[in-house]
Length: 134
Length: 134
Length: 134
Length: 134
Image (cartoon, rainbow over all chains, first blue to last red; front, side, top):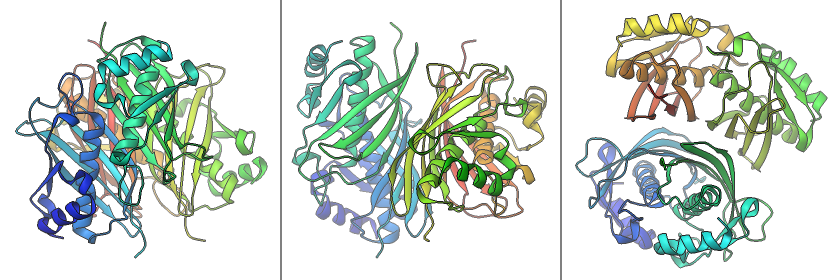
């Protein structure tokens, strides 16, 4: 799927979260931006762990769909995440997903997340998705 | 901290999420209920991955505070989660945290999560928290 | 499979590691002992990370076989491990596995590992196995 | 530390495993080769999970030492690993570590592992090390 097709899919199938995100690039260069808003923050102005987890999860999901097409029922079966640095206050977060394995029933990959414009990543995550039989 | 003290802390220091949760029990028997609402759901009526992650994270955080007192700045440094079953539609989720190590700078433990009344868990998570110097 | 059947399977199908381990109990009470020897140690007398990982992996594998029978081709697809304390010098390690999900194609569970006789665990691991079609 | 210094450190401080590995490159290009031998294999000729885990662990440890010097007491506190493909029979494994965070007390990074000459990775791992106070 192209970037425009992915954005349309997100808007249509996940309307409750689509407003949190903006897609940038496509294919190998696909990135997902979390449009950081008050509801994503925790005391001290940091982005909450679940918001960062959700960014990683959606970024990888879109990378997967860009390869296999609009399979709404692919689901996360496992994830591991390291929170490495405090996000920079007042900046969006950018996630860059990478697919390492695309099998018949499982897909595995990882995601790096940065505060926009920062040199060093805020978080890394690895994810496994289960792909339903067609 | 007692259950009532933890509930007060959550209300005061995390007002943006306190309404999502209800504390049950205390000490070793502490459990945290996610009061599942429309904003936690994904297509098909399932509870979203980030909502389940957030439940595990807050449950372990409260278990930690019940041992070390109200240290608002303890932060999650790593987490690993397995999503094992689809939550039962229309039911709350119940998280039961367990602290396995409480060190000077790191705490480690895990959390099991069930749909209320179900026999088999929906998810498991392990978490590591960094405890700031006093 | 009973404990005796599992021990026989380990001896026959995994002769290269069978001498490292001793099975104790069966069913829900199954435990696996790592007979700690010089080749498992690192400088300072601690048991090496890969040895602890291997103990967790084999313990969960045997717990799985005890439920599904001698499926030699079940393979680990993912694992997450926390090393929490230094093992007690000169003692065996005991692993207690727990199966949390036994699906058609995936099994998920966790393992706690103690130095023999110690109160607090050395390590925890969660594992996912892929089960081949029959 | 240079590649030669790391190889010397490994030989001197970890003689029990040094013979399993060969260092290639240094700095950002550091790679570690597992010289696959009969003792690393499982039935079917595949490299065992603990051997792959050990390769990831040592590769990241050496990458860390190349940055902070010969700190023998840095220890793994957590790891997450995905086994994605069966290694190619009869080939060495090559691990490429990447440090994502080098803090005062914790280092975090990941490792990709390939069968020599293969295009797609066999495994990925993320690791956290605790760095002792100087």
